[in-house]
Image 1 (tube, rainbow, N blue to C red):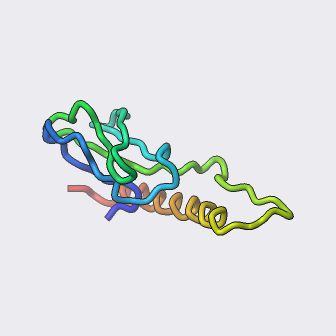
Image 2 (cartoon, helix red, strand yellow):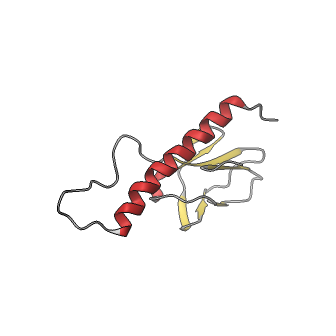
Length: 112
């Protein structure tokens, strides 16, 4: 079971797709249809819309890509340490690890 992405098969009519995994920011979600990055809109925090609907048999993939190059929280000496900042800092690392596990698992397993 993937931790940071989900795949669907297009049927030519379905436009909405669930995002069943957590993310820190909507900009961290990338959607591809048949490997091509595809524009989408958000219906709510857990549902995206691709319009027009992907064609029958198309592979739709929504993947979380958490930024690795920069920290989302920068702690400063003497500042107030908040629960929110600690959560974001830890979740960023946790999500990057999950994404690495998904990538490694995908390269080591044969998909049927």
